[in-house]
Image (cartoon, rainbow, N blue to C red; front, side, top):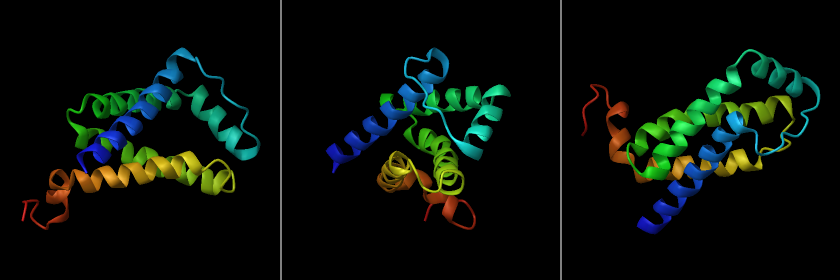
Length: 129
């Protein structure tokens, strides 16, 4: 089980670290995004939202890669993954959702593996059971 957790953590961390750095260094080409999805992406880029996302991707990916504060990295990635999935479901009609689903499954698996760190937020008084 430890090997599966390590593989999931490294894979998810590497994906977000590399794509986070790509927001700053542009070493991978960005394909054109058609329709309303492209309009939204252009607005987000023009107003600096994607730069902020890049910072969050890089920090969360680095935390997962290093293996320190992994629950913090997972908390940062949670809303990002929800946005990725909703973007593809609502604006692209589900096209290109595969990588987002894989990342979401890795995230869920890692939350399960690090459950003691998250247990307190699911109790009424915030204490561990």
